[in-house]
Length: 217
Ligand code: MD6
Ligand code: FE
Image (cartoon, rainbow, N blue to C red):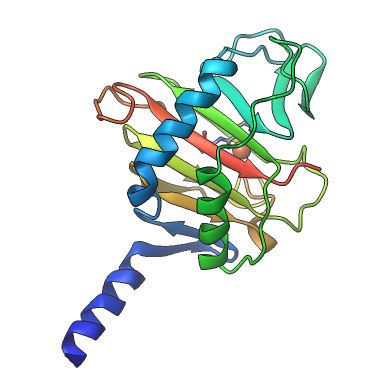
């Protein structure tokens, strides 16, 4: 009996990987919610389809994006920012499906950030070869709030660095259902995604889907 408990504890520990002070990888944390996340995703993209936004420099982004929640992250010739209105439809972004904030609130708490209430959910879709260059998330108002990133579909390598671009960068393999939480001293750490390799996963075919939930306002 005691042996079983110890094994269970060891299992939970092994699934929580500490990346840096304030940054935790929760392996498989979203696995059980996969179906409700998929249903929620379908309802969002029916209202606000994936699109390739343009960088301030005028280049089309490799990652296709959409949003749900009170605010959406957008990029165009004017810059990066959050907006309550989807520029494609002229209407507010679709509401966040209930499963999203429920899951990320639990994930944030498991990582030590209690009472996380996101108001913005960016949804990224990576095709084969798509990548995201190292960057910091600094378009949000309150850096006291963490960021919760849910990986779905085909695997990828997440890059997690420090507060300087030139610093050491961890290569973190992320799979369907893995949840990354970073906040506190890691809130402004550089991060990115290496080019996604050709693969197939029942969740979204050849795509990697990432949900990034934040408190924007
Ligand atoms: C990811 N995305 O897709 C992580 N940050 O796994 C981001 O870190 C991100 O896609 C800021 C703005 C857009 C993004
Ligand atoms: Fe980011």
